Image (tube, rainbow, N blue to C red):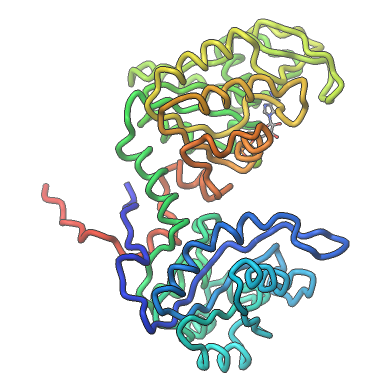
Length: 406
Ligand code: ADP
Ligand code: MG
């Protein structure tokens, strides 16, 4: 298991230090006006920034925005972010004219405690994603300490997500620390019963997640598009539903493994199906293992909702990735909504991971009633696979790991 117990900014002295802070300022922009349409990520970064400023550090902040692929793209400049950050902090935020060029070096050198500088989009430089030694060194040379707080980019091995840690002491900011604490506890020492809910469109996106959670959870609830492959693998008829023919053996193997391990694995027993993939389609209640040839399952049915919410009620930890139906269509959002409500009502530790899952919970207005909604998309999935992530591995461990004896 990777180590999730990493030093944070509270564990080091930042006073008088220049801190290179890697944030996730990858905010959505309006294509026409270039305005930030949602500043949630900037707001989320404020506690770490404020702590550093209050403790006498100066901050050299960096982030990527979009996919400029190593080219200077004015529409992906971080200037609007500097402006918004300045408004939110109620103080000036300097903006660099480059990434690690002359302008940045001069501004970073002149930076005083309590001041903040934002570099241009790190991905404007092709060397960032290559984690190229000269670029990485130039970035590290700007500062005394590296603070990583961009969980959504932690699965990338780029200069600003892990490379600079070869040259600087490296610790986590508060956002990353919270992700590690909550997700790490779920994987290493969950309060039991531990119920994992998996949905979404495809099994093939989630192979590693299913396998890792089978090792750790007491109950595994499978819904969404991926559940039809399980239903078919167990001899059911799934009509036009999403189904991955090349994953039938895999699904059977997972069912067998769950049985061996004593993990309770539930797949839907009923489904709300439709003749076409459309928001206006009429939902038809079917047996999930006997869906007519001309219909496709787009949501779990009432009996499955009951079975799943009953498991949630008994849980002490619930970890959920992947919507249980096409929640984007009102008529097929009932299953996802009912289970999200059960999590909101529960006293258990409740964790939501995955971009679409977070969007679903947000759409239902239930985000605040979860213990934690992870900010990573792909990063969260890699975490749940139990993989070592470069942006986490590069940070200093909080406790010295005692060498294990045979
Ligand atoms: P996450 O981003 O949370 O990891 P995924 O990307 O795996 O989730 O899956 C989300 C998508 O799965 C949603 O867009 C949803 O519409 C789709 N989905 C869920 N159930 C079904 C289904 N029965 N048929 C087709 N698509 C589905
Ligand atoms: Mg998704």
